[in-house]
Length: 318
Image (tube, rainbow, N blue to C red):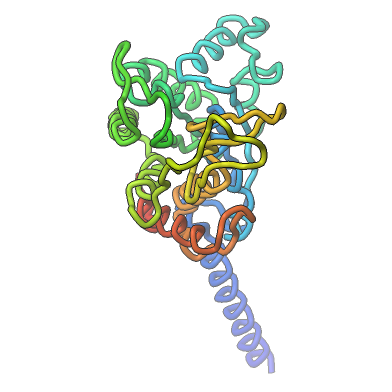
């Protein structure tokens, strides 16, 4: 009788061990880290409005994919790598220096020191993105500071996007020289980001590549509405901006026609979020169903495919 009971107990224990193994195996996150899928990924952004754009819909995408997410931010409009470093440097020299507390009264060190951050991101401001000389030595110094505070954090750089093809000005590509087209802005900024990422040994969010993939495809590219009379425009009339990934023409609070060829609109923010999702969680965004109300089902599907292709389906790199 005792032998039979021991045999049954051993069998039960063995079954529990197998079940526990299966549970743990299925809960391992596709981030490739020790995080369980039910654990919260803590993401900290050092950026500007472009990082805000790219992560606008990331929480919804992460939730759909079953990846709890917490985002911390050190973002200032138009902020370059140089400015972020100068702010951090001021605080490192004197923690009470107001110049070092530019993020709602906090320094970068203070924000980064709250808990543990799994991923920290950086980027260049878009107007300097095409000139690799503007990245040094600031990107390297920021990465070193981040590692000194969060040594286990994975650092990723966002490759920002080119402005809309009808922009009035494009990125700087050298001292007092600017790109002459959206294509050249994409090419020069892409080269700069890849050069810097290779030097730092960190991966990229290829958002700029995703934007260009959409904008360079005849089936999905935005085409300026040359028949619209901008001089006599009155609210709410606007030119046809189908497939635009940028804010473009809109009416401001004074009901005057305004133009923003730089920042992402709802579709652009959605595309950026899809790319970030793929890189962060090493999962293809192609099967996700969420989309902003302003983005049609058809265009949303095209954006998911573009994000899938530029991220190789979320395949892990570095």
